[in-house]
Amino acid sequence: MQKSWTLFLLVLAVVAACSPANRKNRIKYTFETANKKLNEGYYEEAVVLYTQVLDKDPEITDAYLNRGVAYYEMGKYVLALADYNEVYRQRPAYHEVLFNRAYAYMELERVQNALEDLEFLGQIYPDTALLAVVEGLVYEKQSDYPKAIECFTVAIGRDANNFDAYSNRAVMQYNLEDYPAAKVDILEALTIHQNEPYALNTLALIDAEMGELAEADSVIQLAMSMVGGQAYFINNAGYIQLKQGDIQAADSLIRLSLKYDDKNPFAYKNLGELYLEKKQVNEAVSVLQQSIALDSGLIGSYELLVDAYLSINDHVSACAVYEFRADQLERNPCE
View (spheres, rainbow, N blue to C red):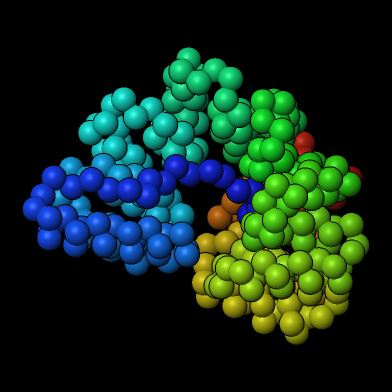
């Protein structure tokens, strides 16, 4: 999947500061400006503003929470975790922050810690859809897509209008290559939350895999128009152009996405596929190895790397790649 699942992060929009009126108003204005930047996706600017708030009053718990969300969205999970821990230290009765902390633990591959938080939350909120959604994301992180689907289905049973459950179940169906089921779920999600850009991104990828390339291109363009500079959207637009056979446009978009985020394994995978189309095998091998280094679970990169080696009759290297992921790769080049 080209980074499509969405998740719910708790954000607080109000601030209380125990300080004189003028100072309190300045803090409130800075906090509200930071929230606006956060909601618009300007995470670095939001972090700067939340930090200014905390410099003036380090007891404003909400600023730690929202700064943690901004750090999370920037991929700075250690810093996000530190802020969530501070929220919980200052306000131990605010158990909801543990949902956010579980997300951070998952990204840091601390699955057991995430499960411990979820187990605790399950005692407090045993029948909430959100708990089932987060449990599903834990299983997704472990690539246990069937179990993740079970969790998202439970969430839908608890809340028939749960956008996150439908959108994430669609991603799991996509990962299992059940594209018709994935499309049903993502369209349901978009009925609940019309034109949500990350759901549109998922829909575009599903359409692409179903061969509906013109529709996929139209949908990803809409998503990009709503969230400027989103590296994964731009890369996915390049992937769709690649499937349409427009190598030049694909090359331009994929490289542009890497300018925004040079740690995206999907972009290197797509670039590898593009190089193979251009018969530039050495370049393909290099970027596919980069993709695998960034995400060792991205099976598509292994498949392309096997193809690259076979195209130059390097059966030894192709076989070595296959044996590393033999349980997940269909074609055996070692025979």
